[in-house]
Image (cartoon, rainbow, N blue to C red):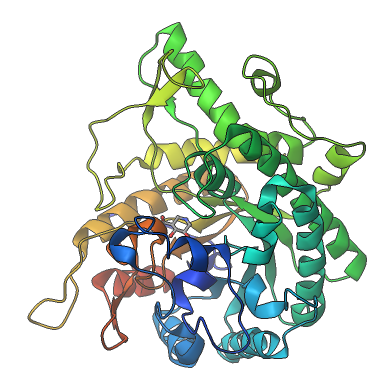
Length: 443
Ligand code: IFM
């Protein structure tokens, strides 16, 4: 039996996001975000569900944190909700919102758990969407101000800052595919949103550097790096186009490489770059966060907008139909290691949707999730063996929650949530995690 060796200071975390777990949508002075509005559009979310109640973590955070501690986790990655923190009409800080996140961080520290705060995990104030959302430059400026408020109000408590969660989803799913809020389908707005998101990130990091705070700050990508389906030249090109469109448009500017040639050339993307923007965007960060679930093979197809599409594969799938492809994570880690010239890396999300049920014995036997996690831990260990500076692994998710357009149908948690009673039941994978973190998991 092999024993996977993780360094003693390896950070083991659980991830969630505000709209997916907090609930209390009409309490504590919280205002409306684009997800509150989008979820109410007929057909936008499976079963017409929304995050009004979700996992009610706003009221239950103490119990949740205590459970994280019991399972041995050393970090909680949560997101700050812009609409809880700033009053849109006046720009004033909402004291109740600030108090909530300060209390959450204090509770984490009580158990020695690090607070990793994502500043933006998709819940843009609706008032900013009404003025154009990420398609307009003013939103990047508003975000920088909001981030400045977060640094001021939580700077003494947050141990790790993440500016954005998954720019790909915010832009391509929200403005091009229209399957996430704000539900727009427009390439021009998508291209503008990409640039404004990059700019917002850079502005926020610049603001942060002026505060003198020392906790590391970075961003989190969900990279798309499809493998070519065949060794045909066209399929290799298709894979590289998708990588450029879905990943390099964020990664390259961050590392001072500008926008990918194929996007500005062949594909004709017109990024609304103003003088000085690219310098702001490449402001150095302290680490890179990577969210990884799956990958698909790419093929060339002229009928598709970027001459490329992904196709079906042979691997096992999860309950979301996503293939189990751990090799893709290793390729992405190596890519980030190389392009960032050895920056610390974190897997800030990785996880598996399973059709979990509570068995007659009262437990949730999620063996498929455990198998998935093992395969991805092996990849992490391989990266460590290659001397890649991988600092931590955060599972998605601490508990089952609102899975965006899929509502509550997909369960990603290592803790089962009974949405009727709000009872939390650690699944077998939660205990598997506890043993792994404690260094006693062999397989
Ligand atoms: O639930 C999401 C999360 O909000 C962002 N990353 C992917 C997860 C699973 O789809």
